[in-house]
Image 1 (tube, one colour):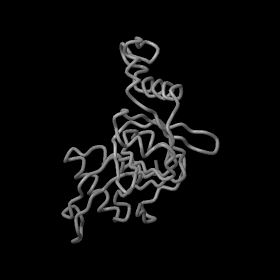
Image 2: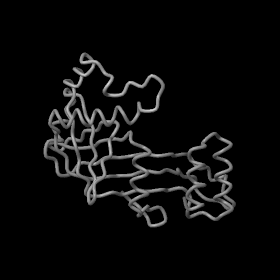
Image 3: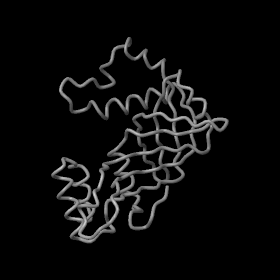
Image 4: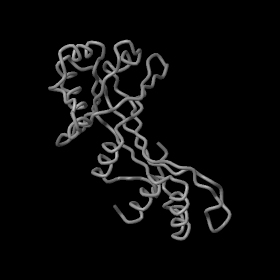
Length: 202
């Protein structure tokens, strides 16, 4: 990732908070020089001195072949993003795009069936707990759970995390506030809120 210092997020806790807030990611890997990509939800597991990302793919997905003992897998996480018109600047300048993103590299391996069931339970309960009539993992019938036979789990031990917030930090205060104002007017509230958090150091 090209990540100039004004946009680079180096605080580990903030990096983890970002990927947890945007868990639907793009998994990229290669085999024999051919790239494969899948967009899937990712589970984040923190340990004392390392990080494990996990997920699952349909057994029919050819990308699974690239994840069995692959030392260099890439996962992309994307946050709020929006077009920034140069008309919002005080002085003439080019238009651009604001965005927040993360790139994570690591080593992948396939899961055992027991590990897969634990991963599916974590994933299901994360999004079901607290809902009305929640379909938590322990409420699923044997017939539904049999569908797990159609997927294979994987886990990735993280070696590198790069997080980038390109959100007009290099603009003047006047330009910055004007960009936030126009984003709010155009309904790009997520990007406007992210810019406000960054400027307020949150």
